[in-house]
Length: 410
Image 1 (spheres, helix red, strand yellow):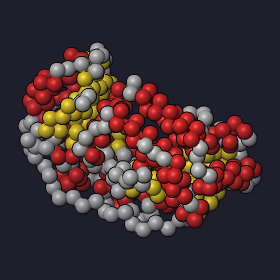
Image 2 (cartoon, rainbow, N blue to C red):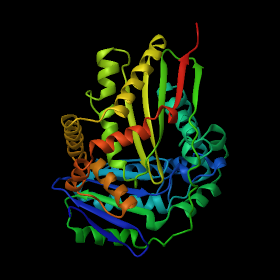
Image 3 (cartoon, rainbow, N blue to C red):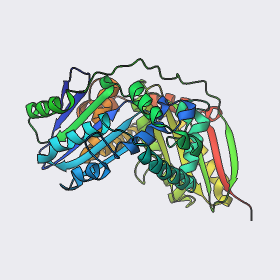
């Protein structure tokens, strides 16, 4: 086992991976995101993430931001539909300093009204910025179509109306209802003795009161494929098409990760990139993505192209999907797809911040972390018949939702 776990009495778990480096990485993953918001509080989880850096019972904004930067460390955070993550990279001697700051901002922030007002303006600017980027906006709108009427479809940033209406009591109610101590992981990747990690963690996080409220996330609703096209003040056409997909616990998850990588994943040799960009020169960016979540997932293909080429690009995309639905991968094709995917995962281990965040999420989702050997074994166990079955489920043209942004006619 290349990692160690220690559970505190309050439910918080400490995950440690030993790495022989002078630089360490740490994260705190909280199982709370935008899907845990009510409709009128859309954007609250992300709003809280911003406010965590503002003021605590012990520190003001400047002291929070300088606490790690003064020793050359890096501190940041992000929010997804299911998680909130705060992470830091620092030199090894500053582990306690970093974890102490994590504990302070997550559990002792005071969310002053003046800081809330300032941060609302920041997020309103962020919302406007995303709306000015059609490649970002179309993906958000697509997810809204895919999960219409469900929290998973809502924009993580919220809307201008909801953000403006946030009150201090909303923040504290969300934290009390969703920051469960038994669904918080502290991940540490560094050159430390595990006993030292436990000692520091117990000192800092052991005093946190247990908080395990009842929480029932809204079940995913029924899915109806939809097709929409809109005129926008843009220069290119943008298109997203896709489907609801498998959850993180589904038996086909690994197979679909492999298939998605083959179709339009990382690298220039994906089928979509070779066909649409390299062969025909139609789109500068074309990619597919599969995001598994706790009880469902998102599969999407995105590309942008000139308006007069959009129909041809769509036909080529559907042609590639049809090939995968109708033709079983040969032994060499399947082997090459596996080798490519395995190599990418192995290289990803070099990004140690990404690695410890991934490990922490895995511990949260599954209660364990697979070794590289176990991951590779799962990939190698995928068969061509499974890939064909997945392709027919996920790429069924009758089940695909599509969204198109076209330029306004001159």
